[in-house]
Image (cartoon, rainbow, N blue to C red; front, top):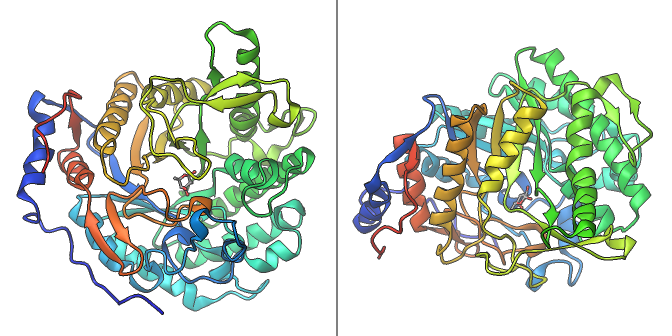
Length: 466
Ligand code: FCB
């Protein structure tokens, strides 16, 4: 049964005068101004918001009993395929000038080589709808999902995927290029690899390190081929990727084995990819330092997805790559996910550190925070986490980092992969059955931030909210 075709009205300014004044009260001690052309947005991905797409591997995975927490399914998700527009109105009401979304390969190319122009037309409507509202789109071309036909022919394990991805990207960019020139080739390649081929928790549920490295190489080459293909079509396009960064650090201060294990994780999870897209070198264990010229300089910007910092504790078990991650005690932690571990610990300074490191690594390459947020159904932590992270971003900009935009994850609660509907990241709460949206207090706060182009100077807790 499809949900009612609800058309939530934009957040009217008068909806909650108490929350309005609570949001303003954050600024009682002054504000930190952001650069004039700063981009304020939210981020989403196709499968998590569009709904009712049976053509990709995630839909198939959701049907397996036990695959998703509480047996949840994406279902109609946020119903964007039929009704994205009311949420675009909400973005405008929140004074957003940017939004990051993804296109779904399986809708655009439901059969190999057969492109569905009505799907591309729907994306044209959405992108046009964003532009009409003064919202600049950033489009991700791969955000964890694949057409079923691709999965059946070996997915990302088979080298043929590189040319297939390039063909999909070329068709998509040709069809949408007049509405978008800001592209993200691949979302969180190393999360995708770790979950699918190392931890085995996402499709295709494998735990095989050599295959994980092979998939990483294919993702790198697919990214590079897409990068060049887009530039051939749109010479002025901005093209990059969204890299999840966790800044692994030893858990016990001064413990050499913890430090070693954390260093190994940083090398595998963070450094291999970022370095390869700079100098083109495939470092071990990806390969033996071969250089592939296609990879060199294939990022016009860095997209950073930052949620938390990981602390690693040494374990002799090679299956865990000699380290297990845990959060230090006494640090504020978010809601737990399905395995009982909190999704994140409060570590906003990490955002400053990432910006500094990337700027040192590649001076002048602009940085966009392509995701940052916290699961928090009751919105107890989110307001302070939001402000604290943005204060660190402001500090990074003051210290010379070229940070150009921030995309909060996310606008409306959406289908959170294997955690299903268990983790709620939205500025708006969603009832997936009725499609009813309710603004959380943070929506007011983020609106005030975007409206002023500034964040509160202090983290002092403002007067209690209603
Ligand atoms: C990131 C993903 C995004 C969402 C957030 C919470 O790793 O890119 O789709 O799941 O985490």
